[in-house]
Image (cartoon, rainbow, N blue to C red):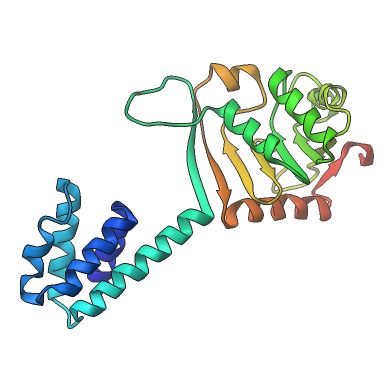
Length: 256
């Protein structure tokens, strides 16, 4: 049965919902003995044809009826469509591109997260320079009433790891933002740094990336990440950051 379930999952993941329904319909209308022939022309690519063959072989080794198999496909297809509608995950990339894989640019994705925020926005970065488009978007978000929180690494003069005071700079550039730092004082994190690069808006959309808030990261470096809209990950990430604040693991700069 596990092989059949795997084959069903592989098929609904690979082909369109309409094609899943068409295949289920053929299975329902066809004598079980003739199903392999009936499905041979149901898909048009070699990869899909191989998955259909795996489905048939797995099915024939079980006692599952044709009607039950059709219902399995329809149910799995419905779940797949529902999940896709509730959450989208996009590849984010800065640097050399290829004609074979499409990806969103880092700056474009970060601006989407910021511009979509209606209530809350939480950003973390190791360093932050003056990236004009990002600063403009942050101030626009603050202007429409978004509560902005930014976690940054401290300067070396303040016990951190970077050579300049990015926190003071950010406070000038985005005066309405609440700036946080990680005040590490004991093991096991002594000597650690704020190395996460994250942006979360309204518990609904998040960017997880290797890119800092710098011009090079937005335009020149080879950076990778994912943009996630909907589903449980943005909310879980937002809750985690809020919990770090509540537990005073990270603190606003005026409390330090």
